[in-house]
Image (spheres, rainbow, N blue to C red):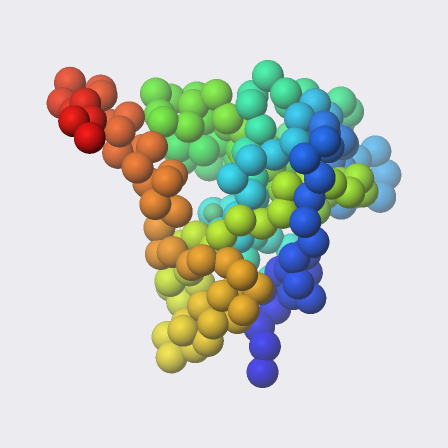
Length: 193
Ligand SMILES: [Zn+2]
Ligand SMILES: [Zn+2]
């Protein structure tokens, strides 16, 4: 049996294009959708199992990547946007009508400040960076999406797609957060290597 990880990756991963330079995201509303323009490709695209990222119905994972904040603008339907959880580090701006998250933005002092989180499945264009890894895999158990005994089967399915799996973010991103905190606390160590 295989899990519905996410429609974008269930049948394999399609490589993105290094020359691709952005496109338009559209919410699911048939009439006057919210649209967001991106003037760059995404980076750090990954499958996320956390409970906060938006995912299409039936999927266990969200697919989410980042763009520089300066590369994102709301093109239409801005009045339909609201912030899902004002207390969360990532302020997810979602459509009031269809519930789709259009972008997540960090306003507080944070390692990822200046980056917006987006779901490129909302775009018709092809060439977006492909999924690089899977994050917060154990969180899918917490949400009751899979049984605890099935978590390793989910990991195997992800690995079969060529994705490394983590129960937090990837080591590179965790290191970036840790370095930010060390710097803030004045204890950032310089490499002696
Ligand atoms: Zn909508
Ligand atoms: Zn997430």
